[in-house]
Image (cartoon, rainbow, N blue to C red; front, side):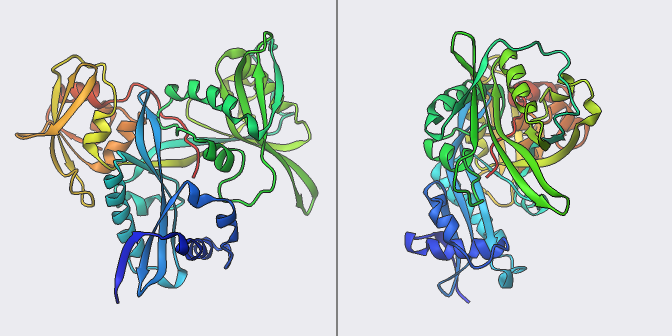
Length: 405
């Protein structure tokens, strides 16, 4: 049978949404994805068999911050296949097509969220931005070293997204992987769950200094659910930024004021200081999640997009194995110069050798070149090569917890 991979046409969006709804057990109901405007920020790619959509995924072209600068980024989401067409390799073929598509668009790196990381690992994505989920009862914890804050909270509306975005942009350079948010992203993916029907936006509070200057914010969902034991109150933090100690103390105290809540859920990156901030940290229930997987779509562009503090002239030869993006395969000469990395095709014996997926956690800052070599994630020629590579391609900024999509 004839198989075709291409971008979906607007008149096919309903079929795409239907395949996605069926694949995620939502029933034959494509209406929410269409009504929510998901395809205004994501471009659907389809696998057609005899003209019928049997599998699809979507790519959101955007940027993400790495080492303090914006890097062109492709958000891969809604990877779907009709249940009756699974186990035929259609999703794999579509992922390879998506890599070619992102390469044509000039997207250097790509991220995705999935409950099935082993599938995407085969195609070059890797664990790079794990996140922590803290769950706690507000009456079980007490802040131990944070002073009584001097500022105050002020309630925000969805229309106030530019103010929140200005604070978010100040935070972005401090963590790798944080997405650059458009107005549409704020409205569709921050103030509302991206794929869950919701009529009203989430709640938002900004933290202001005594002089009225904003220094932080929190976006949260306070809701109820019915159980056999009655009604439970829950609070989930969608997004929180604190640019100074007063904002951090103030926003935490605000969250702890929800004393009716059975649980407060806070999803954060690995540097979140919450366990240090409370007296009884053992009462925090913590869980590690895969978070965003990362792939280098274009090795040359990904590294040349980042700044470098390495001295001019420092260089290595990197050999990359990439079975699904042939433009990455082979030797690369990486040299520092003028505060940037210059990446060109290389020759000779490599100083480092790795699969393209194994570059992702190095790129994000999850693991250093030294630790990657020590544990066998990458192969190196000698100890000198490790130190040179650490200075050239090792990250100086820790990985953040990007928006889920």
